Image 1: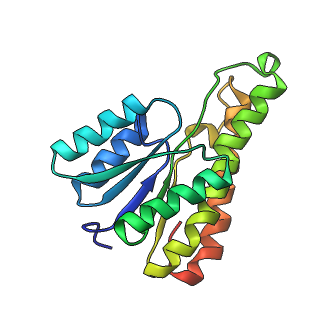
Image 2: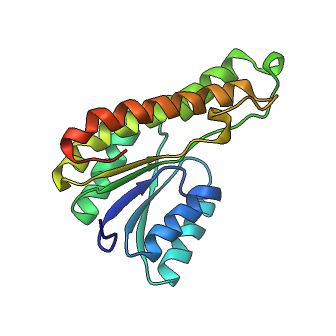
Image 3: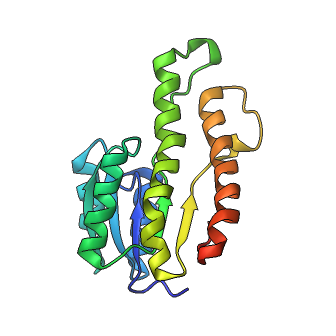
Amino acid sequence: MSLHGKVALVTGGGKGVGSGIARTLAGHGVKVGINYHGSEEAAGQTLKRITEDGGEGILLKGDVSRRQDVEAMMHVLADTYGGIDILVNNAALQKNLWLMEYHEDDYDLLMKTNLKGYFICMQSALPFLKMGGEGRIINISSIHAKRPTNFDPVYSMTKGGIKMLTREAAIEFAQYGITV
């Protein structure tokens, strides 16, 4: 699959790893939707670097754990660039807490952002990805999905869940020519 001219949504694309992914895709000719939930300033800097390097993209504010936000982002991106070819699920939170330091609210926040967010984004992107016949979904996980790390068990649980969600979706979406 040639990347030039493709359209990608990168969740959590405004900073950190997501910013690097967005900039790299744009460097290969991909039109990038940069999702952010927090700092518009950081996301704006990512977009600025992309455009300064000759790339193209738009900012898409939204909470990946809210279906209405995700569906709105998908529609804006598809309407702007004529479709969606790639979904990069990257948005995640990490609390760096021990098991006994976690409060239930912390647990719920990580589960809905790190795991439910990927789930909602995949469901919402599927109709757009099917149109192109060779869509791609890239779910960013972590070493935390593979082995105990002696801290942050809730984050690790979400990353383990992402690993299995990815495997299941790969089997299910193969019928549409979509690689997960």
